[in-house]
Length: 72
Image (tube, rainbow, N blue to C red):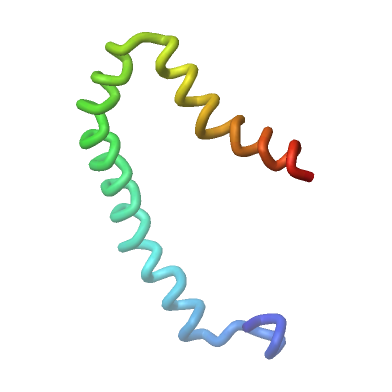
């Protein structure tokens, strides 16, 4: 909006900083909650050993990249 009109409307500026006070703590608490919910799954995965985790990391992060390099 600032680039289109030269300045930001005051109501938009107020809305931006007012909703921050609500949305920032909400985001932090949801991230903490999701980490807490993931702990049982993390315990199972780490009990399978390092080799299993290494294979998962390769499959999800490096395998798709290697496919795109091979296909191009």
